[in-house]
Length: 299
Image 1: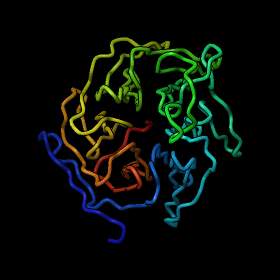
Image 2: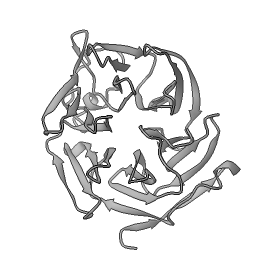
Image 3: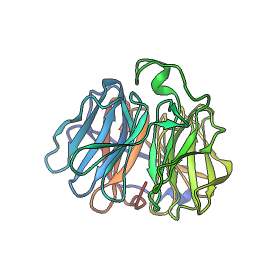
Image 4: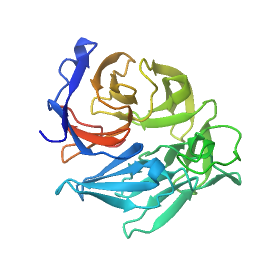
């Protein structure tokens, strides 16, 4: 089919043998510099994603197949999520903040400082069921002018933060990362998986009722490139973006298999009416395929 490449599932554990779907990856769009942060809106049947170096966000329409500009400039936006009220929550490298796009199109700043100091460059974000916003803050957007604006750090480290849904208070929940990146809650939200990209691993934390983290053992390591974005499927398996595609891990940490993609993968999300459409942001392109499993209800 036009714009498609052959899909290849690599089975590394027999538990992965039942995973599959279309025999091809459909390329929805190409010609970007670095795609990131796909977020699917079921009500409108469209996907929003970032083209970070080009300082824009794009929108793919499922009903027509058309791709157009959603926002430009975008503040060098990177990761996104859709909150439980159907609003877009975004990490903006250039503006060094986390924002929410309201239903009327206006933009609300969720957080842009910690203890009076500007963040480095918020990277990826998720929402918990209590309405709290959790995000990672490495320094990729201020290291160079490629994915943001070169600047000095105002905060010494690269941390993981939580924004209280009631007070708006910003709290550091993890401060021992080199550069935290993708993050995702377990299906019951009792655990939080966080990528530390330079260290090439994913860590897993226990989450208390008041939003504090404990533990933090290494859950899995990366054998191709580095990890970036992560999402969970309906069975609680962790899908991680890597150098050769998507890596799938059982909750016990075993690498079950891979979905090989022809470009380095940055992020992924599930969408479609049944959440069985896999959307993959990979270097210059965005791909999709229908699979025989579904994503977890929320990222």
